[in-house]
Amino acid sequence: MLAQTVQAWQEQLHRPVRVLTVEGATWGGGCNQAADLVIGEVDYLVFAGDDCPPRPGALKAAVDHWLLTGTVPGCRFRENGSWLNPPYDGLAPGTETAWTRLFLLTPDVYREVGPLLDISWYADLEYGQRLSSKGYRITICDGFDFDHLHGERTWLSPEVNDAQRDAYHQACAANGWSPLA
Image (cartoon, rainbow, N blue to C red):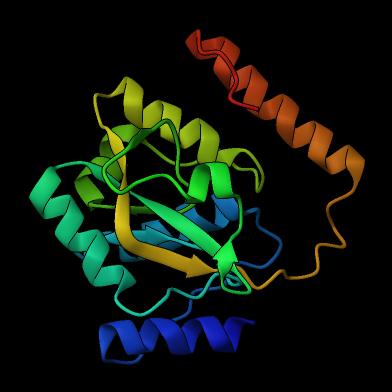
């Protein structure tokens, strides 16, 4: 899956991609560690997964969306050619949303909003809420689409899911937000 995802990013960027791996990290923790390594070198940070190759034109669509609308681009996922979650992924471009699965941010926005929660599930929900609390809007970006490859998640036990959901709910309670899940 990682090889397929890296190849898709290289096709978007027209150059080799540097893969930063953080063994044993959660998705949020790994994104934070990778961002810390490159934050002074890049114009944009993309927090994505190893099982989510971008569809053709996704990166350009997201950067153009950011520049034209001033809003955080909300992505959509496909699986086997169909929307992964039709009620969300089928939203019309420009629709405002409370969260997005993956983030394209400038380093300045990341510094202002802070690191993602050190969890794999629910980190996207909490980060979307934190972006909103800082005045950033997330709107669905036409073309910022990904294919979901369904990697095996043998590590995601009910106990791990419950602990990560609890961490998300605690973050919501600390900020006075209603949980989205």
